[in-house]
Image 1 (cartoon, chains in turn yellow, orange):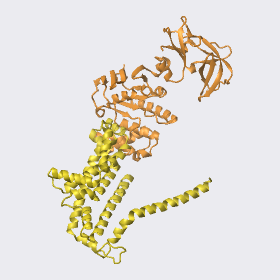
Image 2: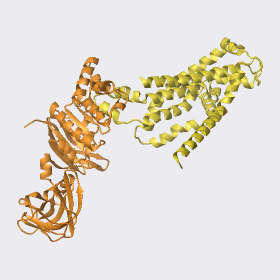
Image 3: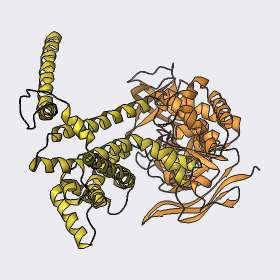
Image 4: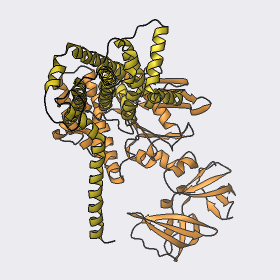
Amino acid sequence: MSATETAYRNRKSEKAIRVWTVVILLFIYLPMVAVFIASFSKLRFFMFPVKAWSLDWYASVFNSIEIRDYLGTSLLIAGVVTVVSVVLAIAGALAFARYEWKGRSLYQKLILLPIFFPQAVLGLAILLWSSALDLSPGWQLAVFAHLVWIIPIVTLVISIQVYGFDPSVEEAAYDLGASRWQVFTEVTLPILWPGIFSGALFAFLLSWGNFPLSTFTTGAEQTVPVWLYAKMVAGYSPQVPALGSLTTLLAGLVLFGGYWLGRRKAKK
Amino acid sequence: MTESILELQNVEKYFGDFVAVERINLEVKKGEFFTIVGPSGSGKTTMIRMLVGMDKPSRGDILMSGERVNDVPANRRPTCMVFQSLALFPHKTVGENIEFPLKLRGETKNNRKTRAIQLLEQLHLTEAYYAKKVSECSGGEKQRVALARALAFDPEILFFDEPLSALDYRLRKTLEKELKDIQRQTGKTFVYITHSLEEAMVMSDRISIMRDGRIVQIGTPDEIYNKPANSFVAQFMGEVNQFNVTRQDDARFLDTDTQDTYVGPPDADLQSGVLIVRPERIQILAEGEAADTEIAGTVQNQYVLGSRVQYEVKVTKRSLLVETMIGDAWNVGESVRLGWNSDQAFLLAR
C-alpha cells in the first residue's frame, strides 16, 4: 500500500470514528437533554415537544424552603462522605498498592466487593441492621451506607496513583533526615495528590447523585434524588425536571471545575 | 594511620533461612573512597541497606566513628545515600530537591538557596537549573542533582547504590571521574556499591569484593588486579586465560587438560590449582624474542576493542586470548609464537 493510500484510508477511518463518537455521545446525553428542555415547559405535565416556555418552575424550586432543605441534606451527606472516604481510602490505597503484607491479595478482593453489591439490597440491609441496633435512620445512616459503597471506589482510584509511585522516594526522604510524618506530608501526600483529588471528586459526585442507598437510610431527612423519585412515582410536580437539571448541572460544575483546578495546579 | 569511620564486626543478615550476608568484617577509613563490588545476589544491596539504617543486622555490630549504630534508624544517622533510582522528588523543583535536607533542619530560605546554588555550581550545573523541574533534566543532570541533594545533607559518610548503572557508557565514564573529583574536593568518605569492577577500579581507594554473601578480598585496585585472591576475583575484571595445572617441579606446571607445561609464578607454593594469565600479559613474540613459557599457535579471530586488539589464537587443543595495542597487525590464519614470563601469571586455588 502506498503512503498516500494509507493517508487516505486514515482520513476516512478518522472521519468514521468521529461520526461514531458523536452518535454515542448523543445516545448518552439525549435523554438528559430532553429533561433539561422539559424543565422550561410551561405545562404542568411532562410533555414533548414543548409548546410554551417558562422559567416558572425554576423560580418555584428556588423559592421552596422544602427543596432547600433537601439540597442542604444532600450537600451535607456528600461533604462528609467525601472527607471520610478520602481519608480512609488513602490508607486503604497504600495497603492496596504500596505495602507487602500477609493477606494483601485477599484484602484486594474483599475491598472491591461492595462496589458490585446491588445497592438497593445493601441499603435495605443497612436499614435492617440499624433497626436491629436501635439506630434511627437519618443523614448519619445515609453517610454510613454511602461510605460502604464509595470507599472501595475511592480506594481504587487512589491506588492507581500509588502504583505509579517509586517507594524509594519515601526512603530517600527518610534517609535525608525526615520523620515518618514529614515523609508523609512532604513526599507521599503531594505525590498522591492528583489521585486523591480525583478520588474526592468521585466521592462527592457518587454520593450527590445516589438514590438506592439514600432511599432506605435517610429516613425523614430526604436527599434531592430521593425527593425526585418520590415526586415522580406519586404526586408529580413540574419542579422535578427543573431540580433534576439543576442537580445535574451542579455535578457537571463540580466535575469540570475540579478538572480545571487540577490542571491549573499542575501547570504552576 | 587515619581513623576508621565505619567498622563492621561479624555482621550477618538472615531472611528466614536464607543467609544474605555472612561474617562481614571490614573497616572504612575517614576520607576514603571505598567500593563494594559483587555480582547480583552477592549480598551487596543487603549490605548497603544495613549501612544506611534501612535494615538491621541479624548479628554483629556496625560502628560509626566507634559508636554502635545497629539500632539507629536511617533518619537519625549522619549518613545518606544516592539511590539506584536516584529517588528525586518528582513534585519538587531541582532547587527544592537539593534544599530538602536543609529545610528539614530549619534553615532559612535564603541560606538554603545560597547553598543549593553553590552545590549546583560545584557539580557543573548553572543557576538556571534551580527553578527547573526534575522531569526536565537529562539522566546525567539528574545524577548531579541527586548528588547535590546528598551533599546538602552534609553526611559523614555518603553511600551510593549503583547510581550510574542506568547511564550510557560515555556518560558513565565522565561521571565516574567527576565523582572521584568531588570526593577529593570534599574530603568526605564515600562508600560505593556496584557490580562493575571496572567502575570500582576507576574511582576507589580500596575495593571489597563480595560473592555469595561473603567478602572474598579487600584491597587497593592495584592489589585486586595484580594479586587476586582467587580465580573468581581474577575473572571478575574481564576475560582471562585459565589453565588447570599441577606442579611438576619447582618452577614448572603441567596442564592437566593438554599436557603442556608452563613456567609458573616463582612465589607460588600451591601443589595444584588454576594458572591464570591475563590476555594483555601474553605477548606475540617476534623473531628472536624469548619468554619463560612459549606456545605456538594460529590466529583464529581478531576483535578490535578500540585502542587494543584482541586475538583468539588456536594452540594445541584449546584457544587463548591475547591483547595487543592496535597497530600490531596479525592476520587471521597466520602462525604465531605466544609467550609470557613467569611473573605475569598467577597460580590460584581452585
